[in-house]
Length: 302
Image (cartoon, rainbow, N blue to C red):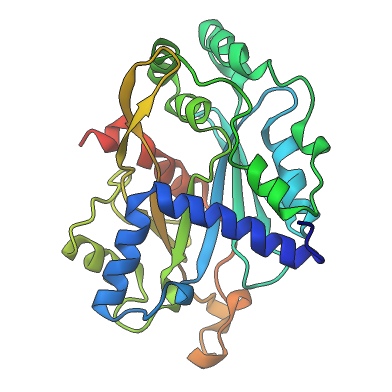
């Protein structure tokens, strides 16, 4: 079915992403259930999605250059670039066509900076993609885009290859197994009701309800200006089946939480007049660097 407008198509694509993500990441439904039980919300639709994040591989025909075409087509605009030196990642964020849509954060592994052995393994899988798959998509066909975002473009790795990648780049191992799968979505806590609308209050609620939170760089990651404050659950381990028939527990995904504070120049605005444009925008390398580790063994193995 071909939908009739870019926003209808975007609604359908985002709906498909969130549906599969919710099915695959148990913490999504657990967090929503806890919020309803606590009386923070009455329905999932009340949650504002701050941003959704994707992980990609920096190889020919794939990576951000391919992936971003989808969301640029729906009116997203490319914004700042971020560099994660130690993890060998480049990332960008994209602002949505309308304020009620989530921001997008897309990262890419700089494969050429890895060891020869790891590069060889990655290319063994990704070299089977001989042209940019997005170029073959009808981006106005929501069902086709939804299918694409959930279909593997290369074969499932062997456990041995996965474990070799894991030793050098946990990000590489995650992407080789998961492909373009939506990595996480983010609850905007600043728009929740008083008592839960700061990250400190919200984290206290999560901890009280027994959620395991990422402790890398502290449970609450704070930008240097103090106006972007983030936290996340630790990815739960899932049984993954590999090409050689081996089953091994690997990191699934997680849920993130963000508080964007009102900018100093708008501090005097009445609360009911504050909108997205009055709050801290963009992202922060230091915060994101630690959020990435929600799927890393240093966190999942705690």
